[in-house]
Image (cartoon, rainbow, N blue to C red; front, side, top):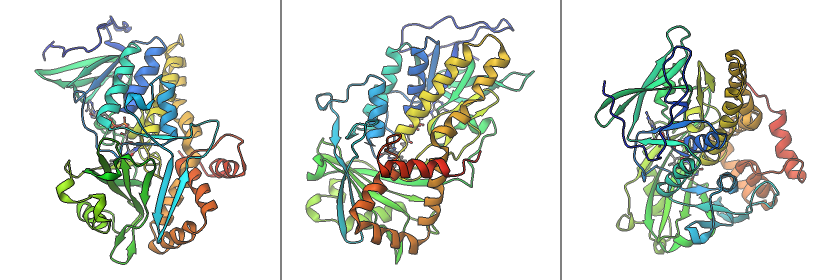
Length: 438
Ligand SMILES: Cc1cc2nc3c(=O)[nH]c(=O)nc-3n(C[C@H](O)[C@H](O)[C@H](O)COP(=O)(O)OP(=O)(O)OC[C@H]3O[C@@H](n4cnc5c(N)ncnc54)[C@H](O)[C@@H]3O)c2cc1C
């Protein structure tokens, strides 16, 4: 084992706290992964005065396969962290969602609410993730890039996670902390090493995306296409076209695991087939493609639980927090990071170990209160649209009823005010009434 430490991109290295065993910790909290979940967790922890160390396997700026779209929910999370979201700072705003399906086209503005802004954003993840990581550093978090966590260090006496083993440029080393956060994305190697696998009773999506130079690059609506066909079967999922404002459009599609086609679909072929039906002047052709077609999984509706297990806490995709209705994950990664950081800050302020433990153990319940009922409704939705005849029926009927689609937008994007108008109360009521299993 080597004592080499890769460059710390924040000046302070912090002495860390001392364990009862006398061994010095590297930080109060270690956050594994500096995507939106990890950086947001680290930001709020640092703001609360804790010594926090993020370990990230890549080096910023780095690519992340994504649609690059943020609904007003994502905008709210950015604003809460003090990030400027003005157009002068390179953000591309959108007014709402344009839905195309069953031969119709509807433009649905984002709802007017007090809880969320009335606009969404688009930003490449290469920029967004770096910006969030730097924001966490500004708040005082330490970040080590090029550090791949390979497994947990367990306390021999209690079996709890007490640190992590990491592979670095020139060897392996261990890092220790009082609390460890897994924010290492969909595969969450750390969760798996602790025995936490994905649940097969929860939804999962797969999506692919690429970029094309296109005159549609400055579209001020996010666009989603409901007509994805596998022969004569309408598939549960959608295609998207998001203008990046830089001469290109992010174009992709995602499918849910509730369809028979899931697992044996050639996603690249499906994307090409779907795009072949688009007007030629939009430019979605091979010559205009600027990036390879890349894909990844979308872990939805709490598809890895428990969110607290033997000292390890899960945030974002690691905990399967993507919204099953629309595949949005950035906002939920950031929100779960904030909920988690506030829980940890309270827990570490308690005098006795048993009290700390009690507070940490409350994190899964806090998540269930935030999303549990809503995700339960989402699981029913995902199952229903996995049946091609139901998907076809729903698309056809909803698309000819704009008022119903405005309600659907609130439900699918999880955008309501507490109290709110009749549609808000209906969406909120559904989530409240739904069973909220562990
Ligand atoms: C094709 C596609 C399109 C999507 N489109 C959208 C969209 O338009 N809008 C939206 O809101 N969501 C979208 N999502 C979902 C969204 O990308 C995720 O939900 C979001 O990135 C989750 O953030 P996270 O921080 O939990 O995980 P990630 O963003 O995956 O970050 C995890 C971080 O952990 C690091 N890491 C992983 N393993 C280790 C390790 N062993 N050691 C150290 N570091 C490690 C990774 O390098 C990474 O930086 C899309 C997903 C896909 C696949």
